[in-house]
Image (tube, rainbow, N blue to C red; front, side):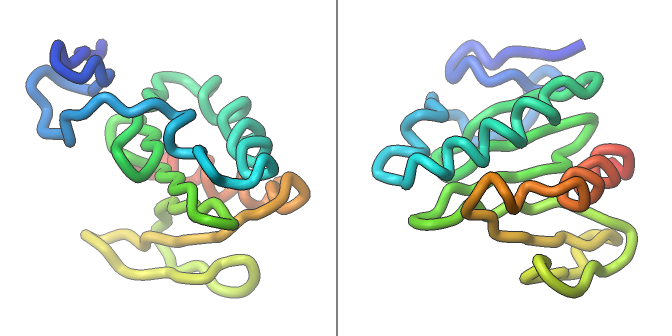
Length: 133
């Protein structure tokens, strides 16, 4: 069961949950960005949004995916999408650019700029993050 903030209309996990309360459209986050980034995002969204109990919302700088807790954050940048997901162990090697211990789990980042970079490995990491949290 979810709760919708009456001010920003953001769907949240529980009533009166702390959040950044502002109305932000996904389209506004992609304004001035390459069209390929929209395609990359759409490919991720098409799969992840269909998983059970996933809430997708926006903040002024990113798109947040929640299943009990935030498991995926996508931040459109000038030429890439910064994709953050969580894991029990540090992730290393390409395409991981960062893996930092945070509250007992690792926050990992990859940067994607084309649809071809959205691989089964990337979806696997995101799915593990979904299951972890």
